[in-house]
Amino acid sequence: MDRLRHFAKSMAHSEFHNDRGELRIYESVDELGTDLADYVAELSELSVKERGVFAVALSGGSLIDLLGKLCKAPYNRTIDWAKWYIFWADERVVAKNHADSNYKLAKDGVLSKVFILIPLFFFVYHYLLSRKGEAVVLIFFTDTRCRHKHARGTLLVFRQRMDLRKNVMTEHRYFVALLSFKTENAVMKREYLPSQKDEKERYHLAFSVYGYGEALSGQVRVFTEWLLNTRRAYTISFKLSQAPRTPNVPIVPSHVHSINDSVSAEEAADDYEFAIRQMVRTRLISVSDISDCPKFDLILLGMGSDGHIASLFPNHLVLDEKDQWVTYITDSPKPPPERITFTLPVINSASNVALVVTGENKAQAVHLAVDAVEPDCQSIPARMVQPTKGKLVWFLDRPAASKLNNSQLRN
Ligand SMILES: O=C1O[C@H](COP(=O)(O)O)[C@@H](O)[C@H](O)[C@H]1O
Image (cartoon, rainbow, N blue to C red; front, side, top):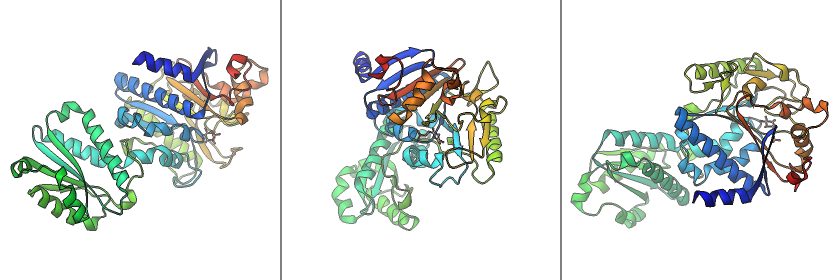
């Protein structure tokens, strides 16, 4: 199976190594997205095994779309999302709900598909842990205002997450059903519930969940009690506006570290560095044994057509910053002007850095960043990404690789 996967993977892209790291070149953006998700998932697994957590820094731009496969099967089930700590390698100093915010981009593209199930999942999971050996019924309600396929998707993911925790679940008999609140549908679907009265009585708890505002939750509870013939029903309700559009995977909201958007760029950079220092102190982020810099398990970078990475632009003074971990600029050549950014020492202290670049408009910058060319290319920020001890991997599609010197890499 593994050999097959390896074969399939090696067919999908060409892989080369030079002193600029590992270059992976893909025939299509879709293949790139699949391999990128695989790569992130493998690093996450490794890091969770070694350190118990995975500290990852994201960028904005086209990278977020390319990370989209992480929210889909199999990664939504197999990745231990609860162990992820998420940061931004750069951020625009705008409100979190502003169209230019890198946080918003990641939230809409990836993280919003991860938030909503958390309270429910962890609540139920911890409840189950405390009721060892007892039988439990979980009922997911939906109604016509909730689109059923999404409710079913959520149910499916929930069930899979529970099944993944086999060591806990073997302690229980549990049962999951999806019902519609509309009475006629509920009656129709009663076959999903334990049928015998004595069977019913063995289930002591009902969670009725999904898509309701406060006003309806009481009715749902009464209905649940009636169905289960028990007074120990428990109801959790979500407002319809919070209903997820796709099945979710659980990232813990407090593990998502976005910038303070209500202060100046300078203060936001200081605050962000302070937050990272706290995490280094508790070793949620490792520390480099060469510098005193944080050692992220993975930093994911995009690259602009001018060769900028994070918010480090060509010929900008902050490229020389050696002391700060996070710095700020107020004169970004690409709008918006105010940004915060990881500095090069932090990027180069990471255990892994991925540079993800697609499109022909970036081919010249890729050539200048990767190939051995004239000295003035030294000022291309992407060329300055040289992890001291870590590993650098370039994910390129064919058009982005089309100006590389080595003809094997171009075709
Ligand atoms: O402004 C930025 O641009 C770069 C590159 O973006 P892309 O859309 O050309 O991929 C991005 O990596 C960075 O995070 C962002 O702030």
